[in-house]
Amino acid sequence: MRIRPAAAAVFLATALPATVTPVSAQAADRAAPGDTTFSKVVVNGGEDIVLGLTTRKTITITWTAKDTDGVAASWAYLWHGPNTDDADGILPTYPPAGTCKVSPTERTTSTCKVSFAVDAARDVDDNDLAGTWKVLAEAQDADDDWTAVDVVTTAKFKRYAKMTVNASPEPVKKGKSITVTGKLSRANWESGTYTGYEGRSVQLQFRKKGSTTYTTLKTITSGRSGALKTTTKAGTDGYFRFRFTGTTTTGPATAAGDFVDVR
Image 1 (cartoon, rainbow, N blue to C red):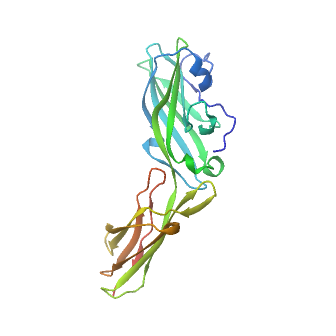
Image 2 (image 1 turned 90 degrees about the vertical axis):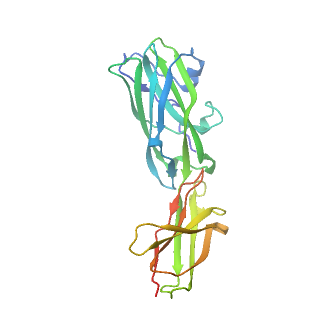
């Protein structure tokens, strides 16, 4: 990932006096420990973050910070490195937009939200970045004590996948064999292309004409360069498709149904 020289921490002003000065995550680590607690931490609405080659996406982190002395400021960011001092793993923020509001009924509690844009073509150039990312949360209380928690929750970054399908012959006589071919590929952030994803379980599904429901006929494994090929018997008019449910590093993909006329 290309990292810009932006501050690692995302400062979020609260409704408390504006005399608080934000510090970097590294400086906060050296400050006196506090007792702020973080809860309800959610990244991207709880959904995986799936990026293709040119995906532009706004990612939101929400959380609650609570401190008996009052919360003066709180911030958070995503990171992927072996430790928080490794800037190679910090997701760039330039700059994020966010708020951290003190509850009108409970001054010791702040509800926080920050959003920032990710441009895959600009920000992501390493396939190893797919997988689990961590969220670091920090806060400054009213007594100028600092709390930092390296991992308050995690989020999944995944490579976008896509699928093709073709069922033939068309038309076909009832009871005859139908050959269904296709390809499973996924975004290669390093090469800037979509490359075949082999050795993955893929479902062959069928939807009868007039129905809205697909039924899984069998499960096959993608071959060299993500190639898919299997056969089935022609029974009735309908649509064939391949469906891939995804992995820990790659998002799901479903091909549009290919209609076969059975005579």
